[in-house]
Image (cartoon, rainbow, N blue to C red; front, side, top):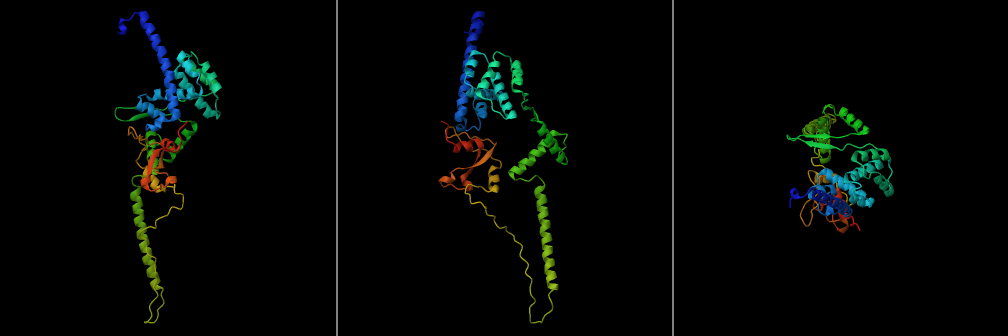
Length: 343
């Protein structure tokens, strides 16, 4: 049966039933998301965050995933929200905006909002439009809404990035532009951002910028030539200052310390077996990603954010800090491996 064959009354009745079903399903989905978040089941599935689990495994858009995560976490604190969603008194967009605004206010004023106050605030938003919801939240929480960062991708591969700086952040950005003005024009934000990004990448991966290696080699060569000339001069001076003696006696020789060609290996001063030498740490983290693998599906996490070094076999079980026993993990998976499962 197609909708075109339904009478007006039957079509409206069918639509109303589907809307009620959608509302019920929405709050059930939020409850599932909240429980998955509590158990951190996305980590077991080789996803570094709940957001990536929703967008990659279930196809939610970024905005839809953010709204559902924010609403699910508020639902966990204020369970009465579920009934309001099913009754149509408040919708998902309102709940998500409320959760995000509360989080912003708590950070701005350094004060936590209790569950009762959150419920009272949500009751004021019942049956209100989105614009009215924004106005009420501004008045009640005394905060301005932040414009989210946006990335617009173009056909040629370029990206337009829209971001909002705080006053302090913008002052630091201007200062960085002044300090780097010799290398990147401050009036061209993309060039300055690219320059600072390359510097940070080089610092984190221990790869000097282009041209720096050649300069170091040139300086080392000059230092070596200067050292050779200095040693020769010392020998010449020492020989000329030796007083004449009987032909049968030898002139005292001046021993010049030989130039060391191989450096003495530096020992790690720490006796902590868990400590990993910085050079080895940088080597392991260079051009890599989280290697956690879901034992059932074989999926690898692959996140490149908040990378840490994990001991495959723990030190407490006889493991060592040898490279073969080390693996990069994102911070979420590294903590999850050592943390007990939630009750």
